[in-house]
Image (cartoon, rainbow, N blue to C red; front, side, top):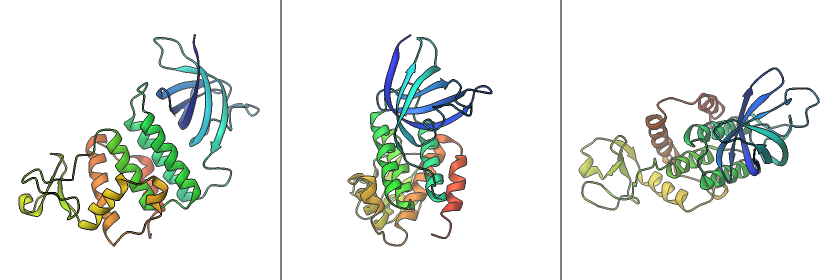
Length: 250
């Protein structure tokens, strides 16, 4: 039974027995993996504090060919992004990031770009108050890395460049249309939102989260990402409903 040592971010865990848990982690080397952590629910377990959601860890686990559930040997915390006294907004955002990744990344499929996105977004959210710009960044980039974000740079009707002037997104068709070709149909994405989308593609999450946006820009992008995620996931994530409540009034 081979032993793997991987860099991982814990996404979630759930009970396996009175004493054991299953942890779900996104690893840099092997994508999403699941492994049983034996005895972790016991009061004196050394693993208990290591394998909490949003922890960045060095994980050792055994796996057996033909079985999808490994067995944890050890874990060492590289960084705990929530720390001992996290604020409510950060907890909600990081839970949402983890649930979104868990839904979008297939088990056992290498996803180094998604690992880098999650790690850099957690780092950005730990270094400053989590805001709507960071959440929007994470959603759009999850869609892009998952191959679920259409090319909205050009009108699919006339070929005109629309990334600087805004467009109407035809969600189900995966197309952008200029106002003339859209004939009033589609989800409006204004010029400020289109410019923010371009900035998002060229910026790391910490830099994007620190930007100031014109009124309506983030709202347009949020509507776009919600529609795309809703179409591909066919459900609303539980953590998003809580996150939305945390951001009310911003």
